[in-house]
Structure formats: C-alpha cells, structure tokens
Length: 139
Image (cartoon, rainbow, N blue to C red):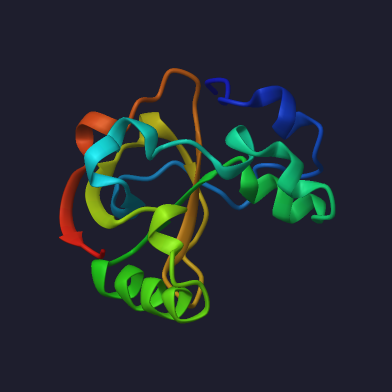
C-alpha cells in the first residue's frame, strides 16, 4: 500500500484512516476558491493544527482528510445551511463547488454519510487540482 500524505499525523491517531475506508473511483464535489484553486485542496489541520486541541481522535483523523460530497445538490444545500449561521463562510471554505473524479491511486475514501459527505485520505504525491473544474459558483 502506498504511504499517506500526513503519515506521521495519521499514525499518531488510533484507526486513522478508519479501517472501513477503501480505494475507489468516484465523482467528487468539493468547495473550492475559484480564483485560487491551487489553495483549495489542503486538509483543515494542515493549515490550522491548533483547531484540533479539543477534538476527539476521530475528528482529528477527519481533519487530516479532504472533504467531498456525492453531489453538487447536497454540497449546495449544506453550504446554504452553513451560510445561515456564518454569513462569510465562503471566505473560509470556498466560493464555488468543483467536480472531479477520484481514482484508486489517490488514496482511501470513507463511505458517504447521510448528508452525502465523505473524506479522502490522500496518498503521498497525490495532486487533485488539475482534475477538478468549477461547476457552480456559490458566492
């Protein structure tokens, strides 16, 4: 099995990535910044590790993964909910939704939850930026 990006951080957490995560080929929708797509594929804890000080190990594990959704409709609906509680959410998570296809060589993915959200723990060397295209502007 290939090594993971952020391997040292993942190894410090129990069952991370979760044992039920699998390699998969699937469409994936992600919040991105349309004017700086290159800055849209970094896990939250890679940029702000201090956010996890009070998180559980399970949440920390997810913080080292990339978040995706199974459809643009689901991602848009969740964005609207987030916008209702945080008017400037587009400045934090992205102003658009992009679509790309994940490959088995990219890493392992979790099963989508009831909201259609799933996570990708990337393998070292994975670069998703060029394979994603904006399909919906949110802000």
